Image (tube, rainbow, N blue to C red; front, side, top):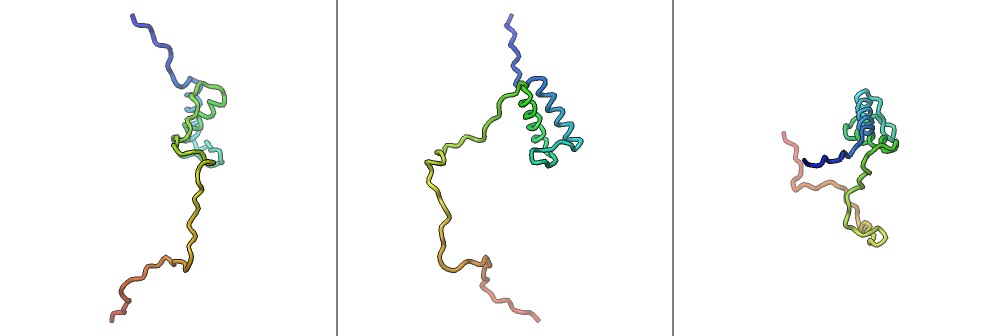
Length: 104
């Protein structure tokens, strides 16, 4: 007989209850984001539910950071500013090769 694997669940029961509650509140239209706006996105509702569960101490994996960048830290990086242009400003209009002529 093979040994039974221990519970390998990523999320606890209370975490899934919180997410379910957040989803119901989203459907009702009462779920608000941090800025106070109404949440419309399903993914955002799940994130809010997991965040609430995390703050209540439920079994939820820690937040993943943003994508890891291979850049150096900002202190070691050279600042790049916009090139200063000298002369006339471009108006954004493109000159056409033909003159417009009125047809009769």
